[in-house]
Length: 603
Image 1 (tube, one colour):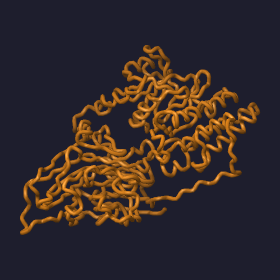
Image 2 (tube, one colour):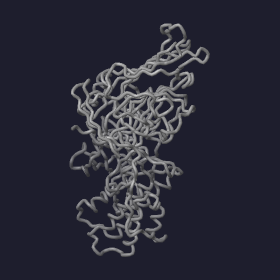
Image 3 (cartoon, one colour):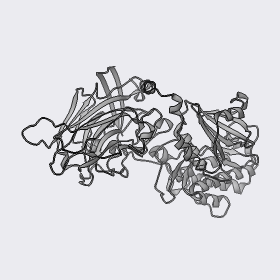
Image 4 (spheres, helix red, strand yellow):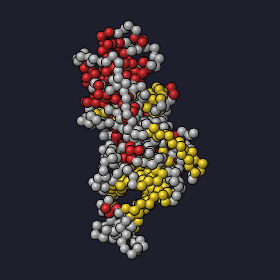
């Protein structure tokens, strides 16, 4: 039996035709074989988590290769002009055809979901709140609500996850949605024919004269990547055959080139396709990879950090010599270097090309940490994206990471006073991020290896590649991408994929417990301070996020400025109720037109 991670819905081409009498109004026509950078903003509007990728496609949901992109919602729509769907005077409907190629691929998860949709909607259609999961970014999180006339949306969904709440058929399926996530008609992926759905509907009773068109996708607990590779749209002024009377009803026909679902044995098919597209377009790969000038301008808004030429960083590190390597991890390698101007010792992180810490994390780190100023944060000196390389330049923190003293086999044991100072320094950094900067910053990866120690063994928190910005008044706001290090991640974060200040506090609590419980301390510690640190660590690592303190409260307790909490003799075991039916799907393909499915479902 094949693993679900090998399932790939790859490059399926779909044609959607709406056939009707044609009004005497203007036509709309465009053709994107790829999506160039200058199309975004002028022609294509991206909302939610959607973003352009470097291969000329549109990623509608978060990239789970850098984490688990749960509860992600993204949308791409044509913004240059609205589509004139029907004429209010004649009641005639326009005739149009749209073709698009998309790629839905698993992200190393056991379960995949939820799918994407092509939609027509009233203008200024914003992403509804809580529209992740089976709502595909189009509807609200309540499938049993009656269809609302105010929610004027008609969509063709390509659903990869069967949800009993929405009366989905078993398996992957195509459906037509009218103002509701409950499809009016569906066809499963097991069916193979040139035209799999025909449904008659008077669109003039469902949609306004002018409509917005585009794509929407979402993930829930199960995740996958959704990429639009190409899109064309054409309406015509040529009349259709006269049928003796005005034909007001639009017939929706979805034609699929080949099978409904194409399943490949490995994800290399998608990678080959993207590489082939680059060669076909005749674009230089360096030009695809290097970020554009607008991105540089956005980075340089920050105070202090600057962009370095690659050659200057190569000289500073002796061409990234092995002798100057300070460390290596899953993200890449860190090298010691000396800049000539300013005269400064630095640590240069060179992100490996195959690393999970990709372009999005690099951008996040530069944009966020470049604006932060605090004595307990690692200072970003600059950055470089050149020659298909991503590099980050930091101040050199000479005593390395806290992890090397707790778990790395360092011969030096941190004395108790240093441990207390490190704890308070880390707490001060998190207080600044959560409450004292202009926005709330959720770090999402607080752990000993990201806590650096300067020459006086003061703590400096670094690595902001996973950090996200929240509003201070948005206490219930959360990020949607699960990423971090197991063991330091809060239980509610692992299950829901939602990070918050409270999940950072949990990670801090685990680090505090590690600092205080090091057996190498033996009896060389202040017992009152030790008791305080242990209680604060357990308090911060409480399974219930509502029972955890804020960083300000934790600091007050560590400084004996506030009483310690009364903790229960045994911590409660966190329990969470799944909100979706999870599905394990295994597939085997004998040929493109002979696809076999094996389904196993359960909570």
